[in-house]
Length: 112
Length: 111
Image 1 (cartoon, chains in turn blue, purple):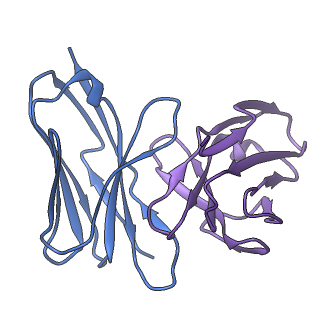
Image 2: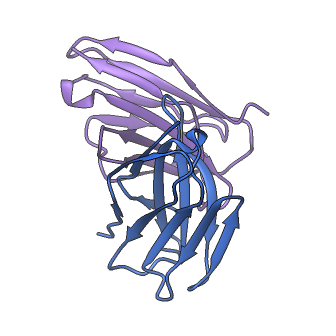
């Protein structure tokens, strides 16, 4: 069974601070995705990383896929209250397996 | 496009009652999924479908059933509700099986 561990589980910071959350596994994934889920809503895809070592930027969010494609990180610069939510990583093992493995998530609260 | 829609938004069931959670997508996606989300436990896959007429079990299928008679619809059936099925249920669809689009969820309370 493939597992994705996310850390920290909870993070509460002040507006303007920087933060990094992590997604780790002992398994190799063909791709890894990050979703953000706001209270009372379904997860929404932020980014997909495919290549080992890949870095993608989405405004103040920077996503990195580990060289061995077993881990990923999400860095947020100058966090804003609108960044508050549950950040989920999900791994795709590839092949004919059409299922994603989800981590338990990091619950981020950005206080004004 | 409405994307993925789910009904109802919230439901209270008594132990032993049955209900069907509805899920419809208008993106012509082949792949559809049902997840449950418990506090602090992330998303667990209940059932999934790779096309009309084809379904398969996920990680936690016990107590649930599904059918997929059309591309658009993927209902989830609870036959004998138990308190352990209290959760938030999300339906998702995908074109490639990779990027998944989620509905707004159904909150179910079994008392």
